[in-house]
Length: 386
Figure 1 (cartoon, rainbow, N blue to C red):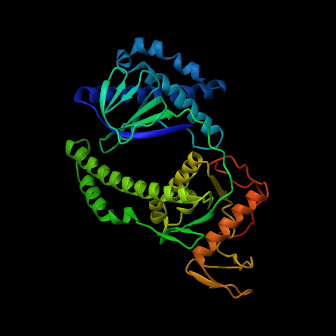
Figure 2 (cartoon, rainbow, N blue to C red):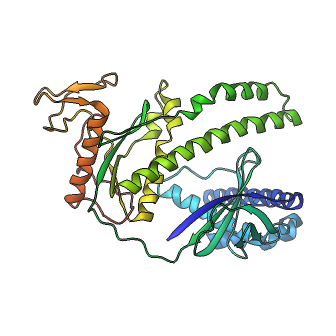
């Protein structure tokens, strides 16, 4: 099983200069290969393969001597990244590959000649780089991805193969349904409501002040770059706080339950709501589901996503009677058939759990451990979003 561990690294001035050159060369070669592939496709109807992209390097290094400064492995990884980007595009998982920009997050990957020993990470041409290791995992180090954030921090993502087979999943155990919200972040089918910390709202005033200062600086000046970094630091603070909350909550749910069922939310469509877009983006529901998915895979648990059109809020969890309409401002309602009073969110979580178990028992889902299993068309009830 492959697991990635992210560490903060502290390169020296000489190492930082070499990393900056490597980031620039990798970015330039990626943009060059992307442009050439696009032009070749327009002219011939066929793009460049991965080997074609790698074979461009010898001639380019003779033409541009500065391409020889970074580790050659990093440049070769560009072909793999570009090939994956086009594959995701053709399989409709992502948009058409775009050009990399200097102001965005920079990263390079080292597939060989790497070693993590104690507090030092050994990388080709860079030598030993001080690394703040929180825990040293077991297994074989497969690759290291070094990245530079907009706030000026360096990180190393170490990919390990622990040499162990995936745990066999079993549906025997506690099952829980999770309904995501804004006032309460996650409402579970056992009646527990986890509060939403809303970290963006917490730092919104501070962020707006830094952005005002940034907008008043002259373009191209050093003061503008300093102000940009201050804005990036606030964004990084928000991101770290949110990730810490999501990691702890997802770990708690995976440890306490054998089957975790959530809704397959269309977050990209939901953020088109101008009144709720900022709160939905701040919640990070997609990232939370991703954490639940891979942590369930690690522990041999089952992770299920039910259809987003399943009317979880409008269906009575007691008698399965479905009401015609239920506006968002109604937080509790009484079933007209069995007279049961429901908390809207808890009722939705119970229905999500029951629907996931129904699909699991009916054989509609593949039950590989931790697999993000989704119902096929026609297996879930259809209706308006609750």
